[in-house]
Image (cartoon, rainbow, N blue to C red; front, side, top):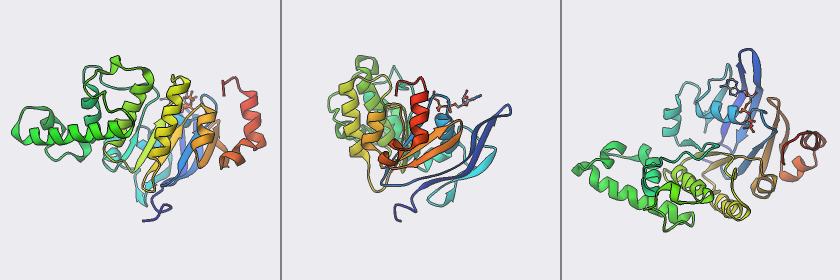
Amino acid sequence: MDQMTNALRGKGIALSFGGIKVLKGLDVEFRAGEITGLIGPNGAGKTSLFNCLTGAYSPQEGTISYAGDPLNDLPPAARANKGIVRSFQHVALCPDLTVRENVMMGIARNGKAGWLSAFLPLPAGLREREEMARSADDALADLGLPDVGDKLPAELPPGVQRLVEIARAVVGKPSVLMLDEPAAGLNNSETRDLTAVLRKLASTDLVLVVVEHDMDLVMSICDRIYVLNFGEFVAIGSPDEVRNNPDVVRIYLGSDDDE
Ligand SMILES: Nc1ncnc2c1ncn2[C@@H]1O[C@H](COP(=O)(O)OP(=O)(O)OP(=O)(O)O)[C@@H](O)[C@H]1O
């Protein structure tokens, strides 16, 4: 399948809360092999769009598909089983599990004996647990974190916790990965590490979408950028096209965001 076929597509996505239109009939085509940025001021609707695509919200109108397969009727877990995975704005690692165990949770959908039996001391699960642990360690090493598997999340700085979340998201080999503000709360050097990781993740098979307020990060890694304002796209294009779009300039110069 080519990169265009492997796209996550939305057509006419419309979402309202209590009569207030949050998304006003959006068309998106997030393509495999590209890093797509989704930007816009606070409250523009970026997270709501993510939630519609992953199934957490049901839009009142519109269709959503991946590689041509309709997704509208699938609940979030079934979309995750199809490899459509997201991260959240706030770090969401389980504090009582080690980093390795947290990452292993991301393999659940590929497990044969099942995630629970892999965590229980049963023969069927033990071998699988070893395999899962190895895969988790490989995913951590790929992201430049070879030595953190035995630690608890709280022992790690925020930037490393973010990378662990990304390891948990990619260890199950997703087809679509949507990251919600991955650079939030990171310092400059952590953001640089994240940038390198995101570049490395981009592959011909993966649809990678990033919601982010850090404009330097977005402009440096994205192939295409969708700019959302009040639930409508005001621009879609390359970083240069978006940077020079007068409507985008007006929105950003006129907003109070630190962007
Ligand atoms: N569950 C909900 N119930 C009611 N209103 C909601 C709900 N979720 C989102 N909204 C509203 O939808 C609008 C868009 O919010 P959303 O979080 O999608 O924006 P955003 O672009 O992600 O903002 P931010 O950059 O601040 O995260 C906001 O006005 C928000 O209050």
